[in-house]
Image 1: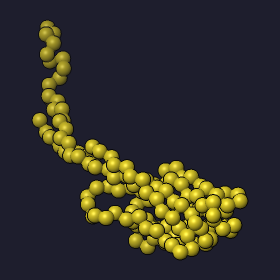
Image 2 (image 1 turned 135 degrees about the vertical axis):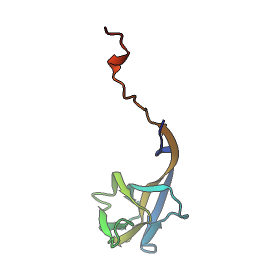
Image 3 (image 1 turned 90 degrees about the vertical axis):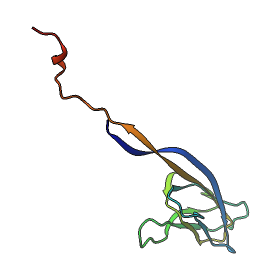
Image 4 (image 1 turned 120 degrees about the vertical axis):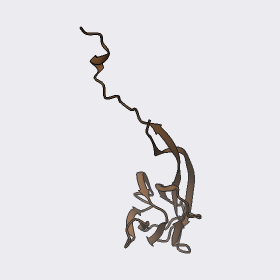
Length: 141
């Protein structure tokens, strides 16, 4: 009987994260505090302007660790009169993730979800098939 090992997800930990960007704090960074062997994912959920947001266009850009020469990319343009909020579905980034208020004064709120996947080693049995033909066991004469 041959044994082989494979990894499977044994536990998932989800934590909500949020920040505020404004004229006094134009940048926010989501980072993993400890370097570990777990898989970390970050999903942006919503960006919305505060009721006190200035009546101008607000542009938010994001940069993550994917790619050696990653550059900030604008991902949302918000205005209090026509689009005060945007929701994201399945927008996954790899930490560390940096958000920057490129234009506008804010305040602007960003919410996200940090997902940590915990892997567990499993042993699986491989079936061993005999080399005999199935009809060899039948008493044919």
